[in-house]
Structures are given as structure tokens and as C-alpha cells.
Amino acid sequence: GAIAYPSYNLGEGFQVNSVKYNGRTFEDVMRDYGDHIDGQPEGYGIDRLYPDLIYIPEDAYASLPEQHIRWTRAGEQRSIPLLPGRVYMAPSGYHLRMEKHPAAPSWRIVGTTGEGIFCHKPCTVSGGGKSEISKSLLDYMLYGPVFVSNYEKDMEYVREIIEKDYSDRWLDPLPPGHPNLRPSRRVLDLNRSLGSVIKLLTPSPAYTPEFNEWLNAIPDHIRALVFIIKRIYWTSWGEDWASHFGVDIVNGTYGHELKYRERKLVGTYLRVGLFSLLGWRTFKVRQDFIAAMKIQTEDDISASVVVPSRALKHLAEGENNPSCKFVINSEYRLFQRPDDAIVRGLDKQTEADLSRPGNFISNFEPLSIDQVREMSKYVVDFDAFSPPMQEMLRAAEESNSSYVVCSANPRQIDGKPTKNPRYLQIRPDLVKPFHSYITKMATRLFRAVPADEPVHNPVNAVMLGRRNNPPDREKGIRSLAVYSPIHYQELPELFMDFICSLTGKSPSTTGAGSEGALTKGPFNALRPAADLNSALVGFILTGYAGFSTAAGHIGPNVRVDHDVSLLIPEIWCRMQAHERDP
Image (cartoon, rainbow, N blue to C red; front, side, top):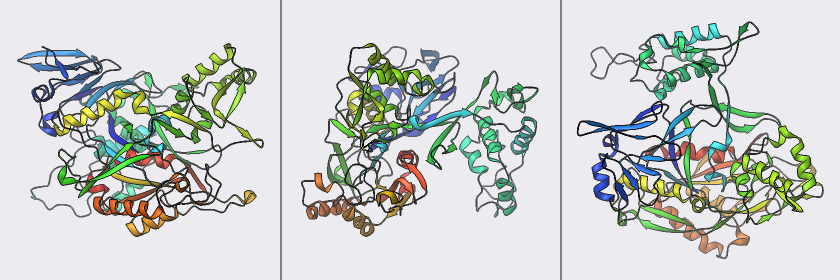
């Protein structure tokens, strides 16, 4: 399980407005939490436990070009530097950081909300994505150019979309004189957000058939160009937005990579599935998309308690469950099976973990130093590893060690790599306590929880995982792939699944069959009836909805690995409580 906090790419500037979101000011923060914050005469504060956490006023403005955060106090402008590695928290708990683009020479301001969603993944069979739900989507993002097919024709098409009058798109328009009737906003209007433009250019039953037909005819790459221009647009450009974009001339003809001023723009793409051994199914995400900030809360073994909501104070607004489940991690080290680490550079967390000393490792191939030297000769493949794994392998080359373990090399059994490589990972929240502290303090500020009272983060969403597998006729393994990417299951159906806990091809046990009631029966000391009764009573008291997500395959032909497990928390944390309620 993990708490996912929505994050956003704020570009080069952001105006804080805390009063709008929770009515709190910097003076309120200093009054309520002054024992934890060193107030500065300029009107900001420094956290006493973590000096890299800076508390800023409710009306501060962050500017990336100036690399300053500024505000006005007593008629005088004050400012502090905007620096990498520091977190700047507003009285609403919304916090900012300066971050370099992973694949471009640009920097951006990233904002994260003070309220997250606790996604709890119980009763999940082996390979169902228990660990993946807490991994950052950032490692699975791909970066590439923003494609232009024919520069002149594409820009004309974009101009048509930007300058179009959209007032006649509604199937049932408001009558003249209606109090809610207002002129349709232009695409580049300051009062129309990027999200509003995306909604505008997405077919809808509320639109006329003719308008939907026009929308469906827009090529995907044209729609992407409109979105990126909207994302970058400054009001000072007026109607002259086109002069700020262009392409290179390659061999006398227009190139196909969009440029903004002097640099090529980089698009962000997400892998969701594979259609062959070499082909990935990728989708372009919004230009302002940033992966959620995740705090891992549990892995294999947790302890939980259900508490009536009426006995709790300062719960998240909009969460109306009659009771709440609280979960705590019972493990210090997490027994990880890094399925994706076999692809060099894909699972950066595993590569970082295995590059550190003091690991307990099982079912990885011991590589001789000669084998490592041979690996490093193939520089293109070797360079695919993340820097920590590269550095560790190079250090092994130069040492007198007899062997070393590499994240991409599981142990060979009967001439084939095992599907069950394992290692013990120290809990990430213990390795990097600063991140947990930031999110807890952000929630405290957002809800205005007094300094001497606890911040409650109960479960908000139950998202168990199921592993689908295609048939393997050579090994006599039948297909078990009946789940779509996500299902809502009412309690009777949900508990039928819990009782069976079927797996068609378990990567960690003997193969097809049941893993025992609520899964992991061989490792569970509780009697099945008592365990099931406790789980059922918990669901009834809390009223949580049970959603199952798929791992491995969608049907026998579409391979998704853990892509869905990684994606669902990103979607869920951006939904309101009523949107998550089936």
C-alpha cells in the first residue's frame, strides 16, 4: 500500500493562494506550530528538524527565471532563493520544489498537494502488484520529441483549432438571456486552463454530432501540438504565438521535432502494456503531468485496526465512511521480487538498492569479475543501467572480489533465468524519512491539525490485485486471464475471490491453484474462518468499495506486466471522494 499525493508541473511560475483552499495564513502557521518552526524576520520559517523545509507566506510567488520566491509584507517586497533540494510549503500544505527535467536541459517548479489518498492492496496473489503500487511512476516514463508531420500544414491546422468559435458545440445550448449563458472562451484565453482545453477537444455526448465528428477527425499529433502550445503560452504573446515555435531544416526540408525558442521540446510518454517482445504500447501524457509523490505504507505484512469515524478528529474532508481502517507496516525489510529489473534501467529503485552494501540477496546469479568486464565492453547495453548500478559494477571490476550480483541477471536454473529473484529492501520511508515528514506536515497544515494531536491517514481505497496469465502449452499451464484492467466487486463476489485466491501461474509458489483464503495461506498462522470473518466485518463497518486490478495480462494476448498496478494510484489520487464511490 501507499499514500499517493497528486503532483503537478507548474512551469516557470506559480502564485500561492492558501486562503482560497483552507483559509490559513502564515501567521496561523507560526501561532499553531511555532515550536517546530524557526520564524525569520523577513516573514518565512525554517523547520527545526529538517532545515531544507521552508514555510512560506500564503500569497508568495515562485519564479523560476528569477529563481526566487517573493512576497510583500508591510508594503515592502521580501524574497528568498528558490533552490534545488529544498521544499517550500505554503499554509495550505501545498509544497513546491525545483526539479530538473529527466530528459531535457530545462527546470520546472513542481507542486504537491497536502492531501493524499491511501491505496491499500490486500489479499493479492503472488505477482499481483503489491510492491508496485508504491513505486513511483517516474521510473516508467519515457521521453521523446514532440512530433510534427508537416510543419506548415500542421501549424495551419493548429491555428484553425486555436481561433475556432466553440459557442455552437452544445447539443442543448442555453437559451438567450439565461443567467448562466456566457461567451465561449478562446483556447488561449487566460481563464481557460489546459484541462479545460483537453475537455473541449474530447468528444462528448453533450456536443452536437457535427462537432464530435470534427473532433474525431483531428489527428492525435495535432491535438498534442495544441496542448503543448497552450501549456507554454504567455499572454504577452497575444496572437503571435506561432513565432515562438518551429522546427529545424534537415537536408533542405522541414524536420519533425518541435522547438520552443532555441531548444527542442520533450514529450512525456507512459508505457501501458506490450504488444510484442520488442514493442511497447505507449501513450503521451499531458505536458504538465508529474508522477504522484508516493509514501510506501505497507508491503507483505501489516497490522490493522478499524475505528469508528465519530471517535476521530481532523479526518480528510469528503471522506464519509462510518468507520476507518488504519494500517501499519509490520516489516523493517521488504521481501521484494523485482520482476522489471531484468530490463536494464527500468526498475531504478531495485538498481539503487542492490548497489548498496549490506543486502540479503537470493536467486540472483553470482557473476565473476571476468563476466562483469565482458558486460562492460558492450557499452550501449551497459549504459542502459542507472548510474548506481553502473558505478557498483565498475567498482567490482577494480576490486579483488570473486563475484558480484547484478540486478538484471537472475540465477540460472536448468539453463534459464529464474522467475523468482529476491532481495530484502530496507523500507523506503526509513531510508528517506524527510519525504514522510514533508507529507505528514503538509497534511497537518492543510487540515489545521493542532501540533499536539495526531495526523490520521486511514485507508481511502481498497485495490486488490489479481495476476492473469496466458496458456503455456509446453509446460501444461492453462490460461487464467478473466480480469479486465479494473473491476468493482460487491462483497459477495469479492469474498468468493478472497476465499479462492486463485493463481494460474504463480511466480513464487508451485504453479496453478489456490494460495489459501485471503492469499498467502501457507504463511498465515490464523485459521481461515477467523481471518475471513474479521475481514468481512471490517468491510461492512467501513463501507469500503473493493476494486480489483489486473497484473500480468489482460486476456491471453495483451501483456501488461505491472503497468496497470502502477497507473491506478495516479488516477485514484486525482479523483474526489464521490468519484471513487461506485
